[in-house]
Figure 1: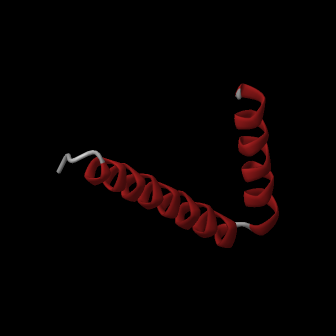
Figure 2: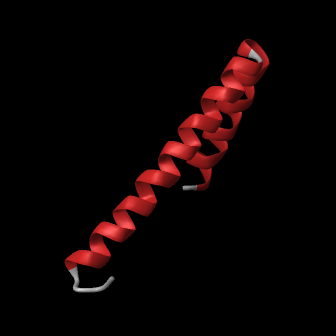
Length: 52
């Protein structure tokens, strides 16, 4: 798991270096989409188990 995280960080840094602000904007959007997906997943499982 730690190696995967290191790989992701390195690839993100490289993309920022090569593509600049456009890559930073894309990374922020991808991170926000991941957070929204995770929150939706938590709420969906909560309703399936009879929780609000």
